[in-house]
Image (cartoon, rainbow, N blue to C red; front, side, top):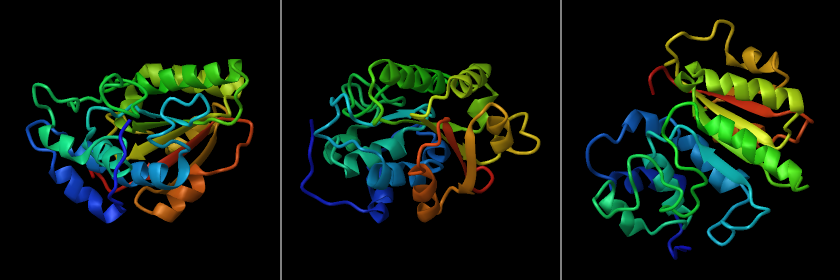
Length: 231
C-alpha cells in the first residue's frame, strides 16, 4: 500500500508520463485514455490506496492494457504507487511492465493487454458482486473501439444486457480505429442489447463525470467517449 505526500492535478500527468522511458510504450493507446482515467479516479470511483482490498470498493478494469503508461501516471498521482518507481518502467526488476500486472501493481484488478479479455472478466466481477449481495460497488471497464472487433466482447455485452448487470459500466474510447467500423455508431449496437448508452466528448471532463456518475437504471451502462481520429 502506497501513499503520497504530494498532491497532483490533471496538469501534472504529462510530466509523470514523461518519467516512463523506453521503447514500445504505445503512446497513442495511452494518451487516448488519459482524460477518462483521470475523471474516474479523481471524481467517480470509490477506491483509494487504503481501500484496494475492501470488498465494497469499486472495481476498475483496464481492458486496453497494451498502453498502460497513462494508467500508471494516474495511479501514481493518486498514491497507489510511488512516483520514483516510474523511472524504471519496463526494467528487468520493475513492477511496471508493458502490460499492467495485478500481482505487482497496487490497485490493478486484472493483468490485461490481450484484446477482448477485460469486458468478459468485468461481467464475471459484476456477477460475483450480485451473488455476494453487494449492491453498492460498481465495475467499470475501459475498452478501445478497435478492441470491440473481438467477438468475445459482444458475447459479454449480450449476456450482461440480458441479465441486467446494473453494476457494470463500460467506457469505450472511440477514436475511429476499428478495422470494420460501426455503421450507425456504437451506442445503438449496445442499446439493442439492452444497455443504457450515451455518447460524449472524450476530452470533456464535465461530460465524462456526468455520464460516468449516471444513476443506475436497472441495466448496464456504456459511455462512448469520442476523441479525434487516431488520437
